[in-house]
Image (cartoon, rainbow, N blue to C red; front, side):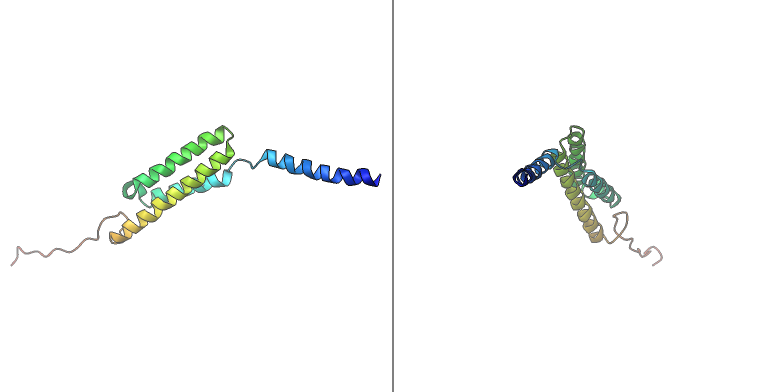
Length: 121
């Protein structure tokens, strides 16, 4: 009796491990959400005008992640969503940097400089 129980335990453990390995991780819900939020932040920072290439790359990767998600290709969807987030953060940081270089104006324009009226002289 002891020998049978002893042999069952490794079998049960192996079966549990294999079942977990086959199931794999679920949908990348958090990664998709993170990518969407990063894209929204980049858009709010003006990336559409200041760094449209990185923002478009992020949006493309997110769209591809959605396709992979619908096809239950969760590993691919997760990888694309993480890439989308990284591209969006790149666009966000570059937009902020360009905005700061342009004089910290929220609209990206240089600060107004007062002009002397020379007509009175």
